[in-house]
Length: 373
Image (tube, rainbow, N blue to C red; front, top):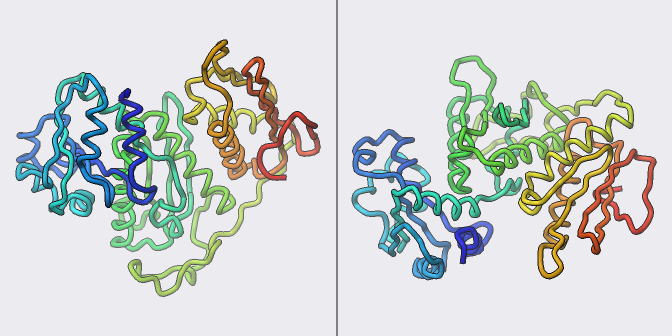
């Protein structure tokens, strides 16, 4: 078993709502400025909490199947006394690691050990899921920078209620969610602290971010742009707000922000922009990032390994992610309509062909359409 296969096996334990939780001791001690722990701890100390009903011994046995591990690990009854101080300031640690249930303790300060752990944990990072993102019904999108090699990916979330206590809670819950998804080193969570500024929570990728961090924020942005119709600058009416964050007296309406009508754009320009965004998003998807992907006018070709025996093929997993890209782009500003996407897989050449057309252009069989009609 490779390190990445181990990471996928750990991710498969439990349920989507209750997965393996990871506590990064060094990160937590540094974040909450606990010098008494920082002085004692080397980089590379983690605790893994199994899902409900899964013994910690099962996690250990999975690690036992992976040869040449350069880090130490053992089952222990809760966090050790040298780290128990984390439970006071760290809400995430308190929630998932304060009990005496058995957990797995990992120690690996050497460079090779940290590299192995990074591969394992990278496979455990979860993509954006609107159903589990905290308080998504209480924010809209006010700005988005998709990012590139020179700039961070950034999303600004405008909150319905700008009360300081509510904003603090919203910021904290989102930050804890990123820790749970093991994306906390990739995505920073902040907000305006100056009085009379807009009630925004700001999410941005860090210098340590991988493609998964950028992909998460871009997926979040596309979801909100599709839901709310574009960038928003202010709340529609105060009647949609509530001053009680814990127990809302009045729930916000399904669409509390006015739709933003996009200006008319020539069909050819829409298709060109759709092709560019389709390509940029596809190469970040896990099933396609290691393949040869070429962009041409109104076309994208994906070459799968052309081996006589074995090798990857275009299958259900790839098709699911391909459809997800098309669906996601329909939520992008300026791309809600006016274009179509089709795909064709050549089994003999192991070549996936993607064709983007104007709305009135239809491709016949064997081409299959992506997205909705």
